Every structure is written in C-alpha cells, then in structure tokens.
Amino acid sequence: MSGGVITYGHYLALSAVLFFIGAAGVVTRRNLIVIFMSIEIMLNAANLAFVASAFRWGSMDGQTIVFFVMAVAAAEAAIGLAVIIALFRSTEAVKSDEVSLLRW
Amino acid sequence: MSPWIFYPLAAASVLGALSVIAARSPVRSAMALVATLVALAACFVALGAHLVAALQIIVYAGAVMVLFLFVIMLLDLQEDPAEGGRTGLKLATVCIGAGLAASFAALISRGGEPAIAGGADFGTTRALARLLFSDYLVAFELTSILLLIAVVGAVVLARRDPRRESE
Image (cartoon, rainbow over all chains, first blue to last red; front, top):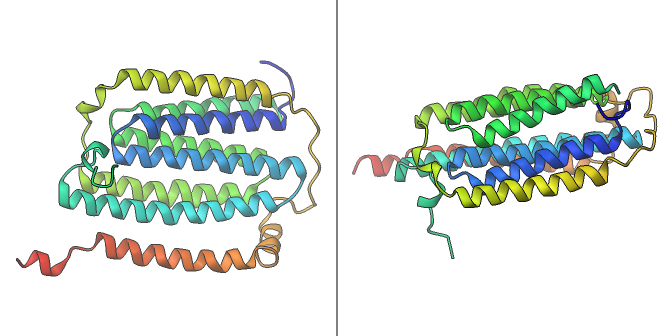
C-alpha cells in the first residue's frame, strides 16, 4: 500500500472517483431507476468531500452542509420516485429513451 | 487515520458504485448502493463525523433505499435486455471517467498537510445543533418547508386520478 498516512487528498480522490462513477452511470444507463441511483452516488461523493473538508479544517460547517444535502436528497428521491411511478402508470415503461416529449 | 481502515472502505465503496452502474437487475443495483452507503458511513465515522454517519445509515440507507426498493418492487422491473447496446458510448464514458479520475487522484493525493484539530465536541449532535440553530437557521427553516413540499408533491404525483378511473 502506498504511504502510511491517509491524507485529506486521499479522501478527495475517493470522492472524485465515486463522482465519476455516478456520472458514468447517469450517462450510460437507460433504466430511470438506475439513473436515479447514480445521481445518489454523486450526491454521496459530494458529502464525502464535505465531511473530509470538515475534518481537515476542524470546522463543523462541512457536516452541517452534509445535513442539508441529505435532507434535500431525500426530498428529491421522494419526488423523483413519485414522478417515475406516475410515468410508469401512463406509459408502462421506465426506459429514458421512450420519455422524449421534452427533448429538443 | 490508518490505511488499513481507509483502503478497504474505499475499495468497498468503489466496487459498490461500479456494481450499481453495471448490474443488469435494478434490485442488484439497489443492494450495491446500500453497500456503498454503508461503506461511506464508515468513512464518515473514521473522519469523526459520528452524527452524520448515523444519519447516513438511518436516512439514506434506511429510508431512501427502502423507498427505491418499494418502487422497484411496485413497478416489477425485470432485467432489461435492451441495455446491451451502445457499447461505443459506454466504452468512451468509462475511458473518459477513468482518465479524469486518475488525473484527479494524482493531483489531489499530494495534499499532505496535517488536519487542524476540531473542538472537543467535534462531530457530535451538540456541535451540529449549535451551528444549525445559529448560523444556518434560515436554511433549517427553509428545509422544513422543502420537506413539506416534497411530501405533498409525492402524494399528489403518485395518486390515481379518481375521475379518470371512472371513465
């Protein structure tokens, strides 16, 4: 294993890797639920960056922001899943390709 | 912070995230996401954020993921055979993502300054609440309104229209 000390940079690197994995999921997958889960991965990557920054600078502000991010993410998940349910009820499909009314 | 704690947690979270985007069945993706969230909660504990780690388990892994699984079960989603195409796009995405992530990791891993020690109650509920009800009070109140809007919106969106049902 490289290095004996885990620094702030290691946590930021993990956050970046997770963020890109989430972004790749949003771009690549077509199932709406999996796209949603990839968005949650991105949000969690940001949370990790905030908590690591709070630890690095000894300030509780980072953790407070994580609190709000979690509340907003939970609200967004509830609304998004309700939208998916309403969509599925009218079209019987959850493939993003088939929901293209707003595409330019 | 010991590398024996960080690297297994990092590997678990990255493997979980990769399984989320790569699994064919949505249920497997959801389970992998739960594993990723738990690994991240353990990272939060290692970073001294105990309340945030508890909230991650209770709210994220315990409520949001259960909601996801309910919806997956309700919609009875099967494995999607049509997802097999677009390999060019997938390959390009993976390569770009890996390249960017690798460059990030190489740049960021040089940050070796020691961490500033927090207060004696760093990461506790008391310290978070002290900030929440003083500096972030407006955001706190607005979040409560946001949650109310989310509840009302979810109920309205997912409700069957009684007039349409009787046609």
